[in-house]
Length: 125
Image (cartoon, rainbow, N blue to C red; front, side):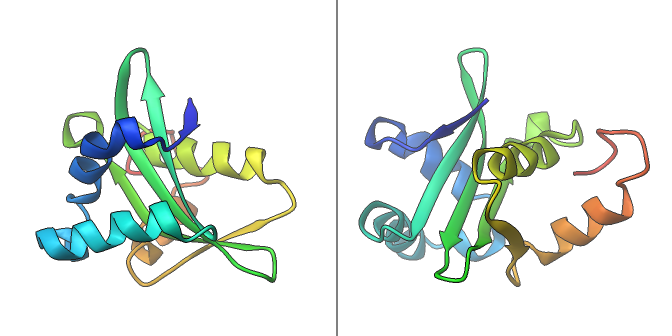
């Protein structure tokens, strides 16, 4: 289930964000978290299964009804189960009037998902 980020989830969100290649540096990671907490166009969503938060989706909502996916991260022990794809699908269901687009960091994920759209769920996205 996709839920909105709350300050109470800061540590788990930072942990998930740190799996992103460009978020390894602590100062960069802290700045990214500040952006999500202070910029209304940047929104962070968490993927919860049972009691565990195992995924994260960071989005920049633009004025032209585009949702640019800035960050997509899944806990390594839960990868290759289709969670990333489910997070994106849930986001699109929450905001049907918006179009999801990738940025440089999330483009390879999007390409992989579109290649696998006709394959068995869980193979990569």
